[in-house]
Amino acid sequence: MKILGQVAFLLLLGGIWCQNNRNAKASKPSKKSGGNQGGDSGQSPPTADLTPGNTRSTRGGGGSAETGREGASGASGASGAAGASRAAGASGASGASRAAGAAGASGAAGAARAAGQQTDEMRLHFLRNTQVTCNDGTAAGFYLKEFRGSRRWLLFLEGGWCCHSRESCDSRYQNIRRLMSSSGWPQTKRGTGILSPQAEENPHWHNANVVFIPYCSSDVWSGTGPTPAPPPRQRQGREKERETNTNTTEYTFMGSLIIREVIKDLVPKGIKQAKVVMLSGTSAGGTGVLLNIERVASQLQQLGAEAQVRGLVDSGWFLESKQQRSPNCPETISCSPEDAIRIGLRLWNGVVPERCRQLYKRGEEWQCFFGHKLYSTLTSPLFVVQWLFDEEQLRVENIYMGGQSLSEEQWQYIQNLGRELKNSLRDVTAVFAPSCLSHTSITRSNWMSFQVKGTSLPRALQCWDRSLEATRNNRTPAKGCPFHLVDTCQWPQCNPTCPALVDQATQQELTLPQMLVAMGLDPQKLGLDPQGDADSLASMVSNGG
Image (cartoon, rainbow, N blue to C red; front, side, top):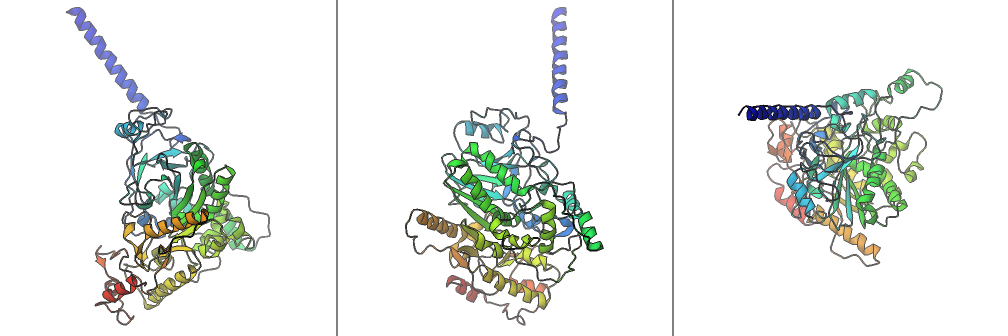
């Protein structure tokens, strides 16, 4: 009995030592806040709920004008199980080998993949090229959901405006760090809208390989590295000197390079065998599509791919601001979008498509950020999705629907905006432009409900897809399948499928006349009948309005 007691005591000591050893290993800090600097993610940050919401935000603090509404552009995060091995390339608790195909957010997901089944989550991969990073030097990367056997690839660029100076970037880093750093990115995301793997929600793209590229470069996806030294020139007064001195930061801006490296990392995944690659994005990500689609097409061609590269721009087709501002834009959020981009381009070492750049003299390249000036220079097929009364375009002019008040002059600007956006889209071959007050649509879970002239957005995209395929195969495109769809009714919200307006004070859904009354205007004086243009408007839309 004495011997047995000693054995039991030794076993107890051994168990305590093993547990302490495990705890000590688990508590060691990582070398860099961004986690792994290349390859697959091997850690499990906290679960993040990034589903698009209806929270309204402002351009305050140099941050994203669309961050609150856009969330993470239709992807909801879920963390993987802790303790996964990077060498195994798996984020599931089982740590199954990459060769076995185990890469889920849990042991069950890993087992499903090992058995050859599809998983719904997109999984985080950090770039293999560790020199291409987010603003703060943490690893850039992408989320991937493969669909075996598919030769269609959907690449998505997240939105979130930009920062253009040390002041605005510091504020952005403090307030919305996830748009400048990968340190808090979740292990997995679940897509919604066109990123959804569910056929009921996404009838035509659910079976594609989906790549979600988080936005962490703050440069509208245009940056190519360290800020270049300004060319020597004669000083032009204190304003110029202050602009030069303040327009330097410790951040790196590599948005365009991130896209390039993502495509490189997708080569082993089969993107060279792709039949169609669609580069898509919302808001600043949509503008990023305009800026990078030709470069992506050229890169894939150089890799030997025969894919047709297409672009899908959602709410990234902006117009220049109408507000009169100081010609010497202060380094604050008071900058117009044009001034922010003009100043930011130097900071970001930003690039624009070559054919557009040739149209403008040095220092005027910022004009290529506007779709109506850039579109005619592009050779890749492009589909534009744009609300005619885009809320972010209105916020540039300090107009907030659902806010405290609205003047008659601001109402007139809103109406003019609809007409100008409509005119700017006249020569766009493929377009879906409802007469609504909103921002972004393709990543909303209810995106199938939006219609123009009786055709839904997914249906219009399918018609465009069929037309492109017919043209590639020297066939005549089918008739009765439209993809140039622009509302012709004049009022905001005159399309009955528009997203509902929400009063920011009460969070109640309101009709447009009700909201105008709440904001201090008389709808009848403006030419609106608050009692009931609903029937006539619905008839107008269904008959081609």
